[in-house]
Length: 298
View (cartoon, helix red, strand yellow):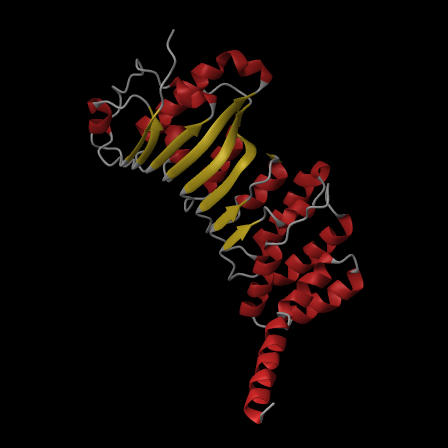
């Protein structure tokens, strides 16, 4: 074997070794995901001494970790929260809790989301987007930290239920909030003044929601859903996208009246409703994505 060939082989082996070298952050994540609290705390504290951009990279990697071994993992969850306390910082603008909160046992989901929200409002108060695709009820302990995130523009808890009055509180407290994706739970009748409704939700540009009702309101569900939909259409003129999902999306029948809507005043660009008529297009001239829902009429 000549020297030229030996050089090529050596170079190839060197590149292979370099490619197999671990990302330094992998050691950090492995320590956090282990159940060794002492080892985890030491490594996380070392990362905490780094600049914000390095901490942010470690945070992004941590948030993508997902538990698939069953119903949560207590030891690892404690390490995760210790890490979040160090890694969260004011430069963080988007947080998706879906994967990392899979380490929380289902029965304690609300408790740990409340704990996470407390950390976020303290350590990352300028967050713009907050997401989760997990399924749980957003109680008062979770709502209270959310209303303190004054820079929040996008709240996407698509599988989570939130009381209607709590959603009003969130939207009223956060004038910068432009997009909401949540399941709305009505525990009382929908009777508040139109002006109160407008004041609460007038800043929204995108509203994606499904509606559910307390057991005592089930017989009124259809009427409440229709009224809520009408209020959105008639009074929230900043809306660009509206999608009331689920069974109540089908309540917009051919006889639905839109007489109270002023033609040409709506900013809607995406609308899920029916019917698709000339009158609908005159009322919503900006709509470029119109989904027509057909009903089986017997």
